Length: 562
Image (cartoon, rainbow, N blue to C red; front, side, top):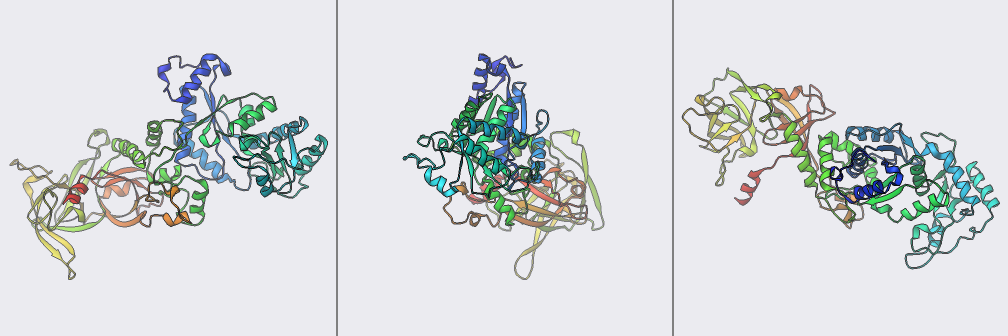
């Protein structure tokens, strides 16, 4: 029995319920052994994160094991770059696999022997129909398929041809090995599926040893069996494949894991098709697999998402059987925002600057304020923020003709500069085109630290940066790559036509000096603006920050009503 004898310790989703039942019955000797089996033909995305959290999480819950296995059966599409990235992503999410990494290619010799065993049992044959003909012979959902004219070859002939395929003596596409099951089966997958095809291609692990490669449905169940997996957990599109999974293991009289399917993640504003993600990368619609607009784990990491936030998101959405549920991206952003709020220091930066000149402040003077790095955690310490006569504030923090309930800076109105002083706008300076270029203000020296000794209150507090001390930074403002809720459902000839042209805006911004000292990957909140992350491109001469997720903005509602 596992160490989780008290059922309340394990959540009651339908997969864990099934595992509990298996453990109670003694099936699999009450072991729990799962696996995460990605294909090394692309980078992992947020949908894979759900599967990673599920498989590794179940193993942890039951004090079991979880293998990492690469399903590397198609050398044409695979690359060691993907192998390395997948390992990095799994570890970054906070998980580690049991024992050594497994590869389907580790079992190629065994798979070949088992394929020959099927032939000798009269349950597989070499077919010379081409791909289109096989598709035509398969039939439809309402009509049974037709038997291949090669279906009744003798065992000896099938073995001879299969060995010729293995020896590299047959051209690609000329022959395949098919399982002999039932061409009239109501499950189309069971109509003599292909289990081996010819590929004269170099494999990243086995080199040029093989000229034939097993298909996923043949490989996967046998790999599970070899590794003594107990529960083979996969997404719902493999539900119909379960019959073939069971058939192969039963036909070969092998140890038999239990396949269980769950609903894949559908997320608003996101394309999770690996084929489409590859297209985006290869055709330079994004800067790479780790572009912060990509739903890949590496892209989310570069954008500043944390593994804790992603794991929390996967926990909140849970595990279900429903195939058509759509999760709103805002839930993922909520989880990110919630975690970053707890762990990030607060610093000040101005993204769209307008200059403020405090006319009654000595132009040669400067002072430094000790400011907390985190308002709720003193352990973060403080940093010194310089103050001088000329400042930058956000252009959105000033309105010449403000609506009611607008408490930021406006002519004649007094606001609090965060950590510093109260200031009042006295004059608006414009250029020849009527654009505001400067605000002439005064400050109250008695309000040092943002507190008034006479007890008067101001409702508006804005952030700022000393122009004299400001560090110029590059801020990359990311938004959804696809603005619509369900881009996959849009009826367009080319899905790239749906790309949001404003998904990335790069702006020159000004920040307090401390921001320039942060290491790559550091997360921070730009006060009153958003959470940001130091990008990989950042240098001490040119700091670069990616916007991770915005803050909630109550002002947007007020201005909309006005």
